[in-house]
Image (cartoon, rainbow, N blue to C red; front, side, top):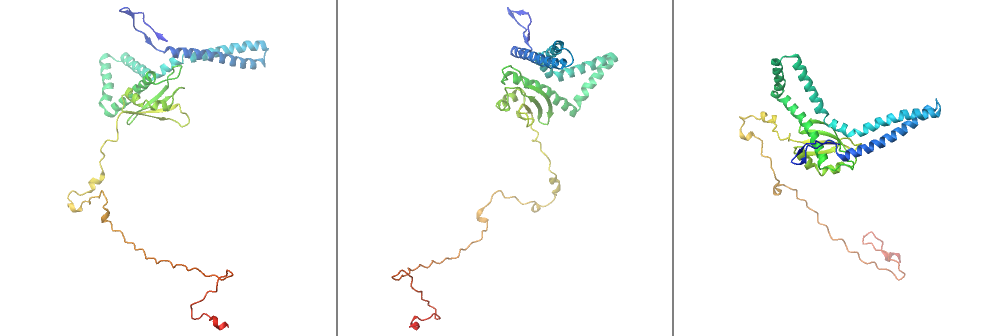
Length: 312
């Protein structure tokens, strides 16, 4: 869906503004026709079956058609204008903010004279700008509005979408101590892995230093959270209360000793372990055997042993 201007400059037509891409428009029209047919048939049949229980079947068919066709037409309209609804959703915060500011200005101008209106407007604008916490909050929320549109530019320019050309749905954004956090719902054709290789380009487009992506919930891979980092909050110097405990008038000898940064092994006193000497094991002498293979009786060298000669 595009809006063209018939103006010409130098023989060439100028002023073409594309609101909805042609591919997205064709896809939404095709989906709208399918949604109309399915809704009209299903709702019409169900209505006819229910009505046939009370009236004649032929009249029930007409009643089913009267109910199914308008319901299908409503679904067709919602599906066909979905790209426009998504475009309006992207600009909803700015639209609401602009309407509120315009309404406040009209009411103030109608109920107060000019000499009072201008000082009141200057006061409403100057006070938040002069108070640092208020000014920082206004700037943070302004960056949230900007980041939503910068992410949309990323998806439209260099991130591949599905075949129908529909972009991911950028839901909401809020400020964080380091930047902004944006929740995005991906359409079919994209995944977290596809976006991880383009984080540097996303950071450049969002005017940030780095961008991180992770799942917003473990149950749905299409629901992602973008953490856009603009500044470093861990570089501040934090004072330690231990410095106030040390007496500045104390002598140098009372100061803590220098903590060693290395270990010198020769200075370590290790106990000396002595291993007792072990004797050599006695060699076993071969045992003689008799003619029939039996071992002879062992003789004892003790004085109390019996003498074999006494047995004769």
